[in-house]
Length: 113
Image 1 (spheres, rainbow, N blue to C red):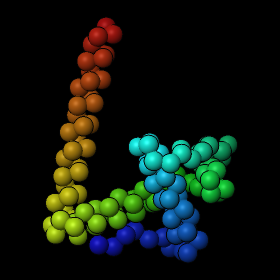
Image 2: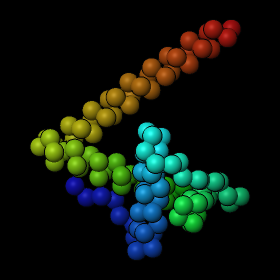
Image 3: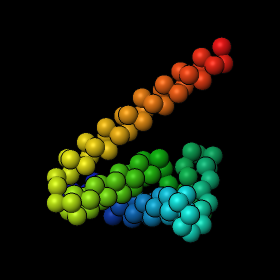
């Protein structure tokens, strides 16, 4: 399994740092550690206070993509099943959740009327 990579070393380092911030934030959401400070700058970039760096939406996307790829690869290795099995299962779960959220939105809109 290849993890998406950036064209240059500096971009890759930014993505890794952003990935660490994403992971720390997700862990904090689950009660592990403290929530890192993230602010939106005037130019649209995000300021990651704990890393003292600004990142773009593309950096965040690439970092998240790399984290998910690493997680899928680890799950596949532990389970000794192909990555596809797990990726498709996640996609079905997300699509199901999307449908349910859409139905809930429809119910809320009907209740408001």
